Amino acid sequence: MSYFDYIRSDSWQRVRKEAMRKAKFRCQVCGTRTEKLCAHHNNYSNLGRERPEDLIILCSSCHQLFHDRLALAETKTKEALYA
Ligand SMILES: [Zn+2]
Ligand SMILES: [Zn+2]
Image (cartoon, rainbow, N blue to C red):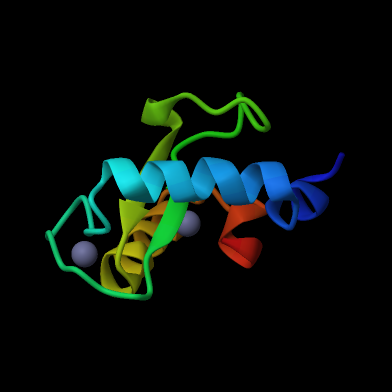
C-alpha cells in the first residue's frame, strides 16, 4: 500500500484518532485546542503500525513550522505533500 492510499485508509483514521485522543485534542507543542489538528509523522519506518512516538499532534501553525524546518533540513518527503 502506498503512503497516499494508507493516509486515506480506515486503519490510518483509527491510528490518527487514537493519537489525538491521547493528546487530549490539543497541539502537543503549544497546547492549543483546535478542530484543525494534524497527526504529523516523525518518521515513516513504521507506516501502518505506528508507535505513539512516531506521531505528533500539531495545530496548523505548529505543523507549518515543523514542515518549514523539515524543508530547511532538505528532508523533502512525501509527507510534505500529503500531511
Ligand atoms: Zn501548536
Ligand atoms: Zn506533517
